[in-house]
Length: 211
Ligand SMILES: O=P(O)(O)OC[C@H]1O[C@H](OP(=O)(O)OP(=O)(O)O)[C@H](O)[C@@H]1O
Ligand SMILES: O=c1cc[nH]c(=O)[nH]1
Ligand SMILES: [Mg+2]
Picture 1 (cartoon, helix red, strand yellow):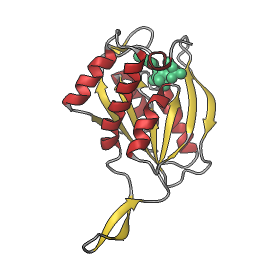
Picture 2: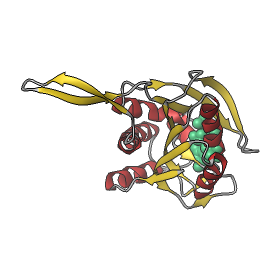
Picture 3: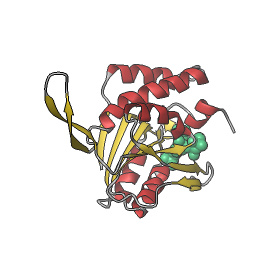
């Protein structure tokens, strides 16, 4: 597993506003969108390309295009949906799959309630998006879904991660999958309810309200 922590003053500034409990839901959504655009730049650094011959107004030129099979972006519902527009804005030719997963707040087990993914992900670069990596249970379950369909190259884009969760992902995935995690910050620890500290609270609730 490779970890990339964004080191950028704009990321740190926007993240601070996001963490603030007094930040309203509309501002929270906008900041998540802005942050994912900054993270997506790093997350897509290794996206595969193929040569493309074009003609500039002056001369022929061999440039690049995103190679097929096209990358697949997979938001983990609910909170991951808040990152989808930002990700596809940067990579508009990517296709999109969906995973609906919810952490049982008592047992911390992951319940998968929706799954809309291509059957065959062989050779596809997959981008899982979810703002929070807490115990790591959700991300490991999501990576396993992709692995079962043949994916071996997975980049997770998260806003906050806990050290405990990063360790769980590293141990669970091993070298089965080339996993890269791009995150705006690694926080201090998990509290007794497995919330990230200092964190930003419940990302899904702050984006979409308490259900
Ligand atoms: O690392 P873990 O301990 O598994 O926790 C992280 C998960 O918890 C949150 O989702 P939640 O289950 O609250 O669902 P929601 O997006 O519908 O709010 C978050 O968006 C992650 O998916
Ligand atoms: O701190 C946390 C942990 C899990 N899910 C969240 O939304 N926030
Ligand atoms: Mg939630």
